[in-house]
Structure formats: structure tokens, C-alpha cells
Length: 535
Image (cartoon, rainbow, N blue to C red; front, side, top):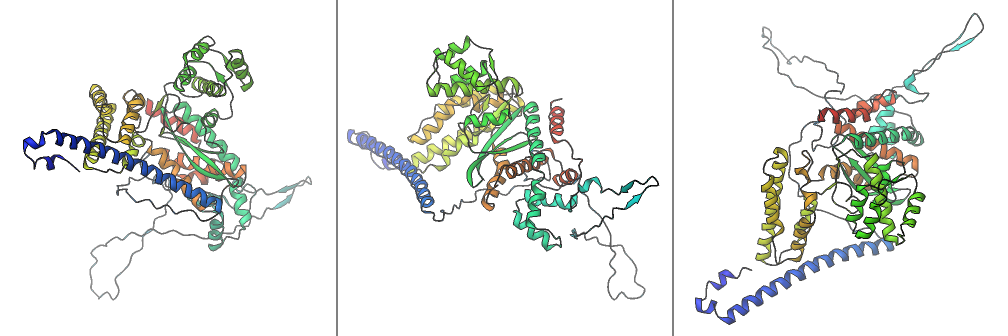
């Protein structure tokens, strides 16, 4: 409640009295305590919900349903524009095959002597699903020399009893969210005689190929993209809770499911099966960010340039340097991987964009403005003063966001951005939570202003969140993958699908060409797109 309107009702002598000043100070103290109590209560309620979920899990009772309010606003959706906010589509006007026909419709009961005055078009789109059964009669001939020759099946059949279009249809139905039982029921419904085991085999036969293509896409993206972005979410594999990590850019997307979401796990994903530890500036900077003291940093300055091809070699170096503390050794091992990845895998000057989760806050890192501001949306205000202060802070953040976006694009107004940022981090309020958010903006200033030095770098990580959303949807409708082959198929197909979308390439056309043995090289398309944009 604002106190100024109340004070205005009293005379100047009363307002300036010692008693009134005491009451005002007391009111401000109580207001601050009330806001602090409300913030603690909010945190306690969230913790209670988490504990209730854990108790329900132990008792094997149904989970508490989560219904989030829909705060999204309708937006215009562009058709197939690469990098747009539209969801992946398997249709693309430049590649989709469409048959056209015209049917003239004459009016009924047309009187004699009527004159034709043209026509009014009315377009209808339709699709035809017809089950076909083709019998190849492989003729057998005997040559004059006594040799026996057999007719051969077309290469696209691949000695299977189901054609390439049918196999591609199965894959795209799975990619769009249908489970194997649903695919089996659908195919039986349109007249295809196929068992559930055959549905499973057709899908999993492509697991190794999809996985190899997915890894090639990641390699191309890491080599060419000026920035990469990442996010992760929970996933199911072998009836266990695992994590799916997404790494992507403007023209590629990669997914992989692992049992861990640690920083070392993320580094191993970037290594793609390689092994190496390198002592360089990137490693030493990583140790500095982890809070390692100067004495340890100086030790690594003396051995800068060394490379080890195995974990054993790196451990031997740490023993020689006398670094035996468990936490220090962990930071050093991660730092060695960071140094090796920076020098051999990542593109020079490449930026990593994320929501600043601990496992991702490494390398030349850029933070997400939306994730930094998001805690302010959850604050419950207990007075009009706090509400006004919260609105002022949020307004300052988004005004700065718009100014930064314009300055990053035009490279004009950098001084204005820095001055506005200084003004933001100097703001103080009566709410501890609001002050904590402002403190985070002060601590991660370089990461949040990274776009000033890297034009074209997004200020948020929304694209990664959109890319990984299908993983969460499938998690809610599917049991899990039950073996490594299934995991490779699921992750590989998702990488191909989303990369096709990012490139603006028709996913349906790609799957048909894949089944016929002549798919385009997506990794090369990724490289060409980035090189074309850079030229």
C-alpha cells in the first residue's frame, strides 16, 4: 500500500513530527519483512510440491497432473521459412509432388439456348491411400552354355517385402509422434498385411544409418556454425530416466540420449568418440571460471601446450603437479577436455548459447535474456511499492533488450547499451528476489552483451527449446526405447528431421530418397548453407 496519499491527509506539522517519521520507518520495515516472508513461503510451497511428487513416486500412486496456463499469443506462421518459428513440416512447396486435374461441372436442368459465361473455380485438395501388392516374377533362363540366369529385384527393394514408399511412410509417421502400435494399426487399416514385429524391424533396420548421418550433421555444424545452441530434457531409455541433449544452430540440429547430464557428459558428446586433453589458454580460463586459485593456474602456465591422448596421461600430469584434491582434479580433467575441444573440434570464435545451466556454461558462452528475466515473473508482490519496483526493473530489462538487439544489428549505439546496463545493475528494491536477479545481470554482463561482438547471435535460447519440445511430447506418449539400437534410431531420425526443417528441405522427399538409396548429404548441405551465408 502506498503511504504518500495517507500522509497527504495530515498537516505539515504532523507529517514532520518525530512520531510520524518513526511510524513511516516502521511501516517500511514491516513491508520489507512481509515481502521477504512471501518469497520464502513461495519457495516452501514449491518444495512441498516436489516432496509430494517424490512421496507419490515411492508409494507408486499417480502423479499430480500439471496444467500450466496458456500465456501464448496467436502469431502469424510463415510457410517453410528456414529459421522461422514454425514447427517442422514434412511438406515443402519446392519439392512436394502434387497431381492436378480439372473437372467441368455443368449446372443441372440447363434450359435450351443458355449461353456459356465462363466458370467459377473451386479448388479441393485430396489424398489417395491405396494399398498395392506387386509380384515380381524373377524369370529363370538357361543359356546355350548351360548357365542359369535369374532376374534381379530392383535395387530400391533391398530384398525386403515392403516397398520404399511404405518404409518411408513408417518412418515419417514415427517422426511425427505416432507409436509403433498406432503405425501398425494404421497400416492394417489401409490394407497392408504387416505384423507389429515387421513394423519394428523396418524402423530399426535404419538405426545405424540414421545415427551415422546424425553424427556427420553434428561434425558439420561444429565446423561451420558461427554459434551453436544447446538444451536438454528428460528422456526414457531402457526403462530408466535419462536425458536427451540437443545441440543445434541456424541450419542444423543434433540429438543424443545419455544417462547423465553432467558437464563431462556434454563435453564427451562434443568429442564424438574422440579422446584428448590439451593444456592451453581455454583450459586455464575454464579453471579460472571454476574458482581455482592462482597457484594452480600458474602451475598449468608452466606446462602450456602439452597434449594427452588418454585419461591416464592427464592423471599422470596431475600427480606430477601434486594436485590430489578430488574437486580440483575434476575441474582439471574437464578443463583438459575443454582445451582439446577448443583447439581441434570447435570453429575459432564460435559462441555457445544456452540457458546457463551448469553443464553448458563453458567455452565462449552467451547467456539467454529470457531465462535471466524469467524468475521475475514468479514473484508475488505484497505491496504496491514492490509491484512498482518490479515493473520498473522488468521495463528496464526489456528496454535494454530492444536497444541491444538494434545495436547488435547496426553496430551503432554500443555506448548507450553499456550505459543502460550500468543503470540496470545499479537498481535496488525492497525484494531480495528482485535484487538477486539484478545481481545475476551484473555477474553475467559479458555473456549477456556477447551479441555486440558477434552480429547475428540470438539474444535468447528459444530455438533450442522449440527444437527439443518434440522430445518431451514423445516422452509423454511412448514407453521408451528398449535397447541401444532403438536409441540410435530415435535420436538419429529426430536429428535428420529437424535438420531438414532448418535447411528448408522436404523431410518426406528425403525419407523416400533414403529408402531408394540416394539421399542428399545433409552434412554437406549444412556446410554449404553456412559457407554461402558467410560469403
